[in-house]
Image (cartoon, rainbow, N blue to C red):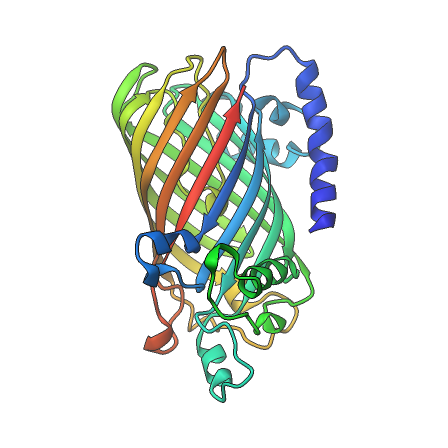
Length: 362
């Protein structure tokens, strides 16, 4: 974790210094993303179960001018221009860099005295963790109603960051946690650490609620392709209902999984809205279930991988202008995912968690 943070600071500090020296009219954003199934206990105590995607966090910085030059976003610019062509692009809408962790656990966290532990582990999902530095570049079409995002994540599978965090929370009973101490992290995918990579491309289309004025309903659709530690595709719909800034339609409702983008607005308008989304995914490979290059004690086969999954989310968000161009953005969502694998019925399950986002922009 310390090495990842050091690398993140090496990249972000020069960018912040350059941005501060430029007069620029683009908006800066800094934020924190937090996914955690623990918070579901306040809705229903039975929903707080460490299984499947159990926690994730990301530190994020966004500024469009980062993507206009330099080596960090050179691959993004090349991919975007190769796919789109310069004539169809109004300009760079946003450039993002984030430092993130995602953690995946089976329903069975481990018990040294359980004689059925081998059976449970082999039929449940394996322990897995991913730490990465993600970069993405978003480009807005001339019409303002199409948004293309190219993302590149570089990181490692199998580091002990998630093990240390989860073990500490359970052992020391943080937030009143009474879950058992996890004994299965020694069998996580690529235990000890293995490099990994993901390249993704995503296109969003605004269908309803076009225009750079006050709106009360927006509907957009998106399509995505991911190659690397995930080989998958997805098609989805997002909606916002409430007091909206019409131009700011490109908010992504599943930030850590699919990257986060915004369409910048020249107006600093107050927003308060309900948001929701649904996304269908097709899968050919998931390294966090099936393993990578190194051998792991427990992995799922291609046959056991569900080739189709469904994600959904529902929540609320707000933008609170302060002074000048400064503002706070806050959102909270319940998120769900359909079963990702098919072994025996007792281990196939939907999973839900809560996602919080907080941004400061200036």
